[in-house]
Amino acid sequence: QFAVGGQKLYVRLFQRKLNWLKVNKIEYGEISMDLSPIIEELAEARFLQTESELEDLCEGLDLLSAPELKTLAKIFHLPNPNGQKQQLVDDFLRLAKQRSVFSRSQAGIGTVILKRVKDLAGKSVRVCKGPRAVFSRILLLFSLSESMEDEEAGSAGQGQLSTLLMVNMGRMVFPSYTVNRKTQVFQDREDLIRYATAAHLSNDIATAMVNGNWEEANHLYMCAKETWNKLKNHPSLSYHRILPEYLRHFTVGWVYTRILSQGVEILQRLHMYEEAVRELQTLLSQDVYCTDSRGRWWDRLALNLHQHLKNTKKAIDCIRNGLADPFVRTGHRLSLYQRAVRIRDSPSCKQFRCLFHDLPVIPVEDVTHVTIKGKMCPQMGMGKSVFLMEDIGDEEGGEDFSVSTVMCSVEELALTHYRQNGFDQGIHGEGSTFITLYGILMWDIIFMDDIPDVFRNSYQTFPLDLYTDSFYENRRDVIEARLQQLHTASSETLAKLIADIWTTQEGKAAALVSWGRFVSLQQVQSLVSCLGGIFLSGVFRQLSKDLRHCRGGLPDLVVWRTHTNQFKLVEVKGPNDRLSHKQIIWLSELKKLGATVEVCHVQAVGGKSKRLS
Image (tube, rainbow, N blue to C red; front, side, top):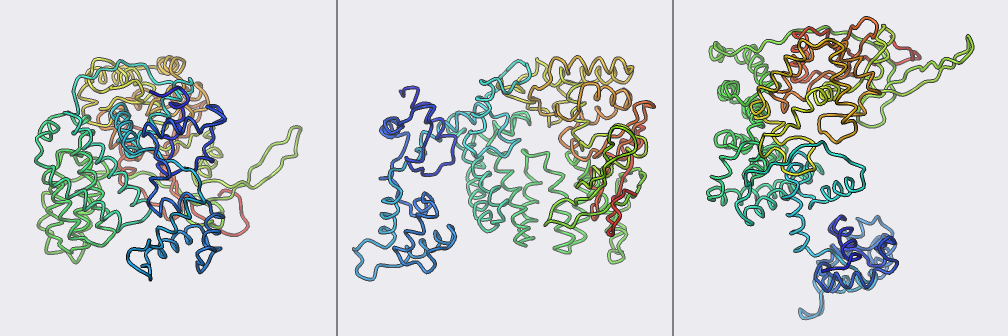
């Protein structure tokens, strides 16, 4: 119903935060030098609200700039009219709560402040919530694939619009695959609205948690829990439960389960350990949704029972049940096992030793540890350690070379150490080095046709089942054939397989592939030639079967000697840094597959020495 100008302006305002905006601050010269008639048209059609509907003082104050707030503060004789913006807002809100001294019928001071705010701000508008919610739902429905992997479910779909824009401008290209939507995820409009509401709520809770507002997070979580308890017996849920796991992600039950899981962390932060234990027991007893979180839940439950509630017997039962749960994988399995060993060997828990006689053993291979020393930079606040290193730049023509001191991370310091020890090539990529090789050598399988519902729109960077057990189950034969092909492949064959994908797909947006991880195709080929097909197929088998749990914990560095084809995989640990459970498991697995693996500890030294020793 709008002319092109109206459409363009609405999309731009939709992309912005849902706040009031001063009309004189809205400038989009590419649409029109005078936006007033377009704004009026959008307001008449109820796509925009005007200042006549601005009734919330807090929203009004937010509209003003700091100088405007100071002017207003002087008019109302606030105690500190030159304070910070937030301080002035708080003072105005406090003032607005005071009762009028004259009579009940007279306008309160809050109303007077709001009128002055509006006079100062002039014309202002805000996107109407009704139509905005409809567009958000359309975008949510259109782009389900992205919504839950990113924490973007609550952002009203702005991210998806940006993606569309990037594609239309030719700045972003997606892999080629066939969209095949077979299963209906939502039963009806109400079902979608319930999902969208839950997704926004989960997002609000996540925001409160990130900002450390634990009381607010707890309040939101309690409200969500109440809603979920009323919803639990809704007929649509029985339909959701039979969907494959990768579509169950987009159901209201999955989102509420995630909220209850967030609730556990909130309760722990507020030292409400008994409530956290009850919530975990509920999640573990009836959850059909977030099966991939069960390892974390068992681990948390054992921790709370043993450390906070001092109930060792229940903790041991919990560990036993957790280790028997098929959904508890890799790091969480090892974590539970090691907790059991610590309890078993603790002098204070002697009376419980008989309960451990049939504990399944999880063996991990020990690996080589080396220590190097480096000069540490005085810490600027928290964060990762920064080291100082002499960078020797060779000057052309003979003996002169310049020495300069550079700041670097522990990983860069370690790379230098290995370079000095004859490894002429090295990449600090953490897991992304191997994940990228996997994404390239398995490209056609990841994006293959014939599997319904894993590609539901044209803007996906991965199939929806990639991080579930179904990925391997749905493609077992082709995956096994590829692993066999890699197992027997020569260096030349591997180089050709890499080149075929690299030359046809480079730059396309694929979730597993970081194209910038390698400096060139030749560098990838050089690395793959060193690693060899037997080793790669072993690593890829683990990733294919359980990418969700195996994508974390791969070593920081891969270093290799191009002329001898030797390679080494290195996990680097700075001062006070320990191996995680996932890292311990990967180092052990990689060693079993025949790799030379090493943990390189970087020890900080003071004094004048900048040299690496």
